[in-house]
Length: 417
Image (cartoon, rainbow, N blue to C red; front, side, top):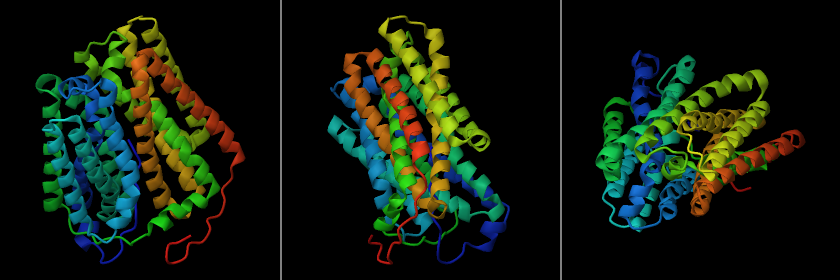
């Protein structure tokens, strides 16, 4: 789903039986359960936004702010939390982050006002931003060096599966029992994962403290600085419509009770796009892949916009178009990560962490724009997403040829530029 930034772990080595024994890789499964909970929580509200809006007495467009608040808090909080918690032992940090995420979801489930819900979504984002990057770092420390790629694939798999299954299943649960029950289920999953990490994951020392100024100094690399805005723009295009999936699909003839199945097809497309992106990037290059991906996204959203605007409710087309939209949305993440690491190979952990922040910044911006557009009809919302996808192609082609990697300016030991 999203890239997991990996930071080095410094201090006492993990016990030998942890890194070389047969259980090292299996222990990453509990970390994948945590990333599955995080991935589900990030977009769980999309499946029942109108119900939430009606119960808390706010317009549907305003209810979308709950998704925006989570995404924005994650984007802005991730680098700050990475700096503030650098010296905290990793297992304790992971357990605490999951407990915070679980408690925040319980608070969201019992929120009596929309503003209280917003506050709890921000708190949930804090837990998610503390857990996800460190889950990747711990997974890489639990196994032998030759198994690290598999360990990271397991952890990232939790996020990917959440896109395909977590959100649709939550939508089904919300349809049966209400949106509060869906949030409570996510909370239970988070607390279960916290207990599993505490019981099953061995102690891993804290990593080195990297000052915030040092983390941001990589932006002096001209290619990195030019590449990161594309992540935000592309994810904004992908998520203009997603948070408002129920009214958006209803305009295509999909009943609210059937939204989960269309979201599941979106998820299948997202998984396929994410998994194939690395192979295609290696074979044909990131720029070609991204160009095709953004064009497919623009076309899928434009077709859905035309169907919605003309009231041509062809429900049979919604599923394939949603799958194409999902594939195009999530094929961009591995390709962008590849471009960034290629531009700054010595700062891979930092650029991937910044890319993760830009992903959530784009999700927040896209959701905010979708809330503004939905008042003008679902067709307008679809067309806005298509326009942003087309703009992503223009930006990509304009920057891919002009910008070449530039050296990083040295950063003093103090971390000040």
